[in-house]
Image (cartoon, rainbow, N blue to C red; front, side):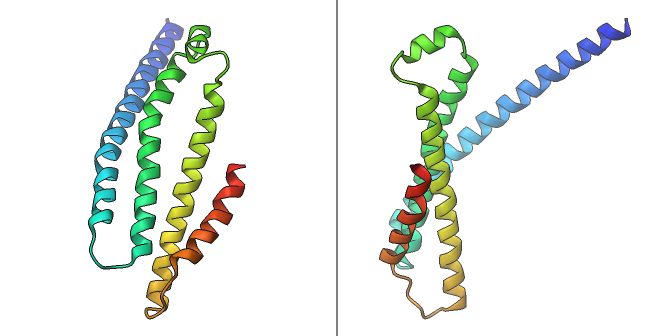
Length: 150
């Protein structure tokens, strides 16, 4: 009897964890769906300030928002991971490869953009009268991001 009780406890804990993960994903989707467009709108309409920082915040919010829109679709297809779902996606298009490339690109762009925001803030604090050129940062951004995508 003790063995059946242990199986019931594991099954109950498994169901509870499934609900916790599901609720967490739904909350993250709702929060990100509302806050990323607000950040993009705020950065776009902000008067004055540094143009480079505004562009970096808009790139960061766009990358996070696009990841947020694709993530529920990916989780849904992962839950349907059967032979039927592979036929649903198509024989010539491997969704796993496209999904991996998209998330890799979005994650790299988010991380590098966050790095550049931190570097720009450091330069603004350490050297308040130094103007950081956006062309310099965008060229460096291209050299950092492009090798990771290839």
